[in-house]
Image (cartoon, rainbow, N blue to C red; front, side, top):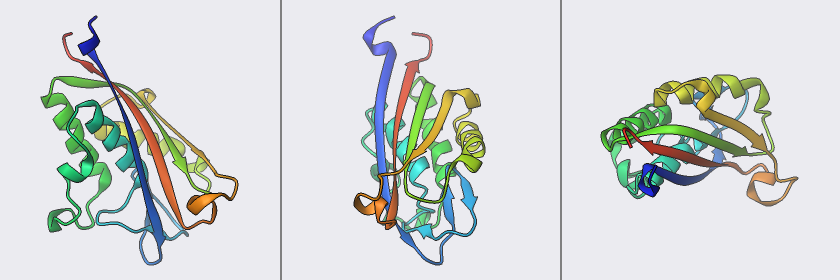
Length: 164
């Protein structure tokens, strides 16, 4: 094993809530809540995970790959974009070893949707579900997430060079 065999990336994303849009988190539409504002479906969880993988690949960030001023990505499924990032990862000779993600928001509760989120993210990445962790936390009323103005997500991804 060499130092170049493994790569770590960290991702972050945040979006404000916006009435009239579906709330999509980890590829799962959660009914009864306002969605998140953004050019795509604004899935902060998928965006943070994509950014972690793209960072580990040293490819910049997802805004470079999927610019928010490109009409091709208007309303795009972020899980679909995650699958494209997985293709890029494999084309660069890497595979996902593990990823862990944290949603930061006061509501809704994520627990009822967690396993479906993990399954959708893992499917987009082409890996077993046990390689993708999803959890949630609040900020105890502090900051924009605490005021229920939006949601944020963090992710970390560990990649391994195939055949290293």
